[in-house]
Length: 155
Image 1 (tube, rainbow, N blue to C red):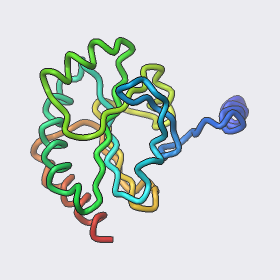
Image 2: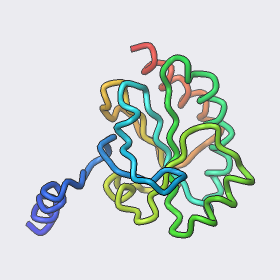
Image 3: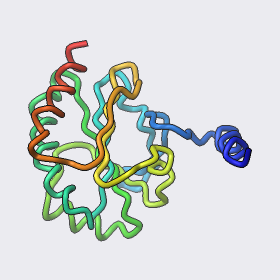
């Protein structure tokens, strides 16, 4: 009963309680922006943090797929969860991102996506519907991840 009350309270407050593009995060200028700005595209949302070792491995792959498929309508959006933005900026100096980076230091968006590990990725179709998610990043599965995105881009 408490969970239902909490869910209803969050919904009444305008907080989404499930993976969706209807969430507010911060951009590099610390302005609140909505993930819905990417609706109409195939969106690959990736949650990461500076302390996450596998995140360092996923960034080059995300750079590659963003470059390869952006003209076909792919948007890669990486959401940082560090409470200290300086840690995120240091990470980005070492591992640059050629895709959209957003910030959620409060972790409320991450909680609504119910993350089970880091990094966690979520794929949304052009209609903004969640169609796939993955926990962790495994280089030996990169071709599989890419094929899932290619299939969505063809829809």
